[in-house]
Figure (cartoon, rainbow, N blue to C red):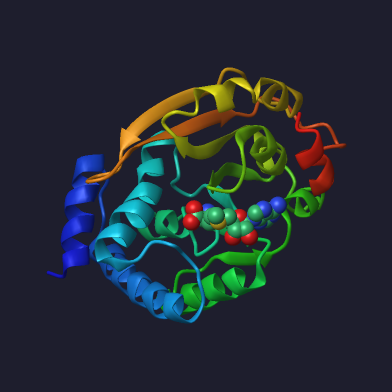
Length: 237
Ligand code: SAM
């Protein structure tokens, strides 16, 4: 067994997640393609089997414990090199996945990666605050996921318009995000979700304590949101 497979299998066990042999093989190919491309362009600051396995793959997979992903329509906002959306799809192939990022080279990378891995996903080069006004995408996802994109008040405005009422937004944050969460109250309530969100802290196998903020959408987001990015940054809700 490769070092990557060993870390993934024992980490998945620790997280209580089942990984098929096909999924483990796909993560091997994902690692090789990410590592090769990272030498050409800077896709991720992390490198090496241990960091990529734990801080990208297992951290992404930890989300599986916090929502019902089977056959869910899922969008990853600001997916970069595919995290957390692509590892979720590799582990749960029934997910209907969209990966969205504003940086073209990252979208091209995940598009090629999905083709190589034979993992179907819609890969979109767009800004979240613009795409969220398109009827085809607005309020059409069961689950929205996002990691390392913006502070929670701004991130809620980018992400909650994509969530169906009754659906959920999983924001991946550090475990010391209490202040950030408290400061998101107006954004969460204005955009049609429930405050306070529930928070679940988990340890990345062999890594840090992390937090998933689980934000439930209960009513439609007013049509005026999201605003233009400059406005979101200048005066967060
Ligand atoms: N989520 C990945 C991860 O955890 O490895 C990538 C994180 S990277 C620090 C942030 C990504 O969010 C970048 O690829 C950037 O292009 C994207 N991004 C930032 N603002 C965005 C927006 N308004 N719409 C779409 N993508 C955005």
